[in-house]
Length: 209
Image (cartoon, rainbow, N blue to C red; front, top):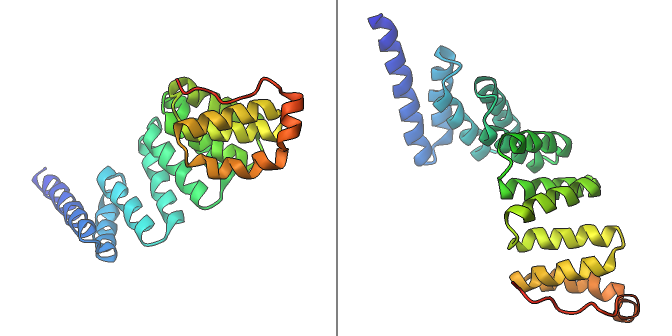
């Protein structure tokens, strides 16, 4: 019994040392400590969390995903782990895996606004426009003041050639964050003011609420 406790104490000490090394940005040295600790206790959550950090900092995202997969075996109902996994997959342009992981995260934590926005961006990248609109609408239900979500919704409307809705959503995004004007001007000009006025005579500026 005492020997077991002693071993647990040694493992936790190694993890503490690794955490200190990470704070000093000595990631290779931290990895050495973590490997020793995980060899003795493969399910040590703190060690696996630190392993994710080290692998990301060392430019090894696939190994970070492996560590996250190990964490998910221990905590399969963690929206944070699924969200982190989704984000890393998207960094690797692995959109299908990223979308799947984000959907699982949102199933567990459906009120996470930023993950809805991230999911919508990934869906747009995969040309899954209908699903992207659904994700953006869920996001805006939770946070109607998100300029990012309004602008991406405008892009979705533009894809469906619903130019009136696209302009309205873009104008609202700009009212919330004027920096989106630089992006919107590019495609608003392409649509052509004459066509917009002819087909959508009632469209104008939208007052921010």
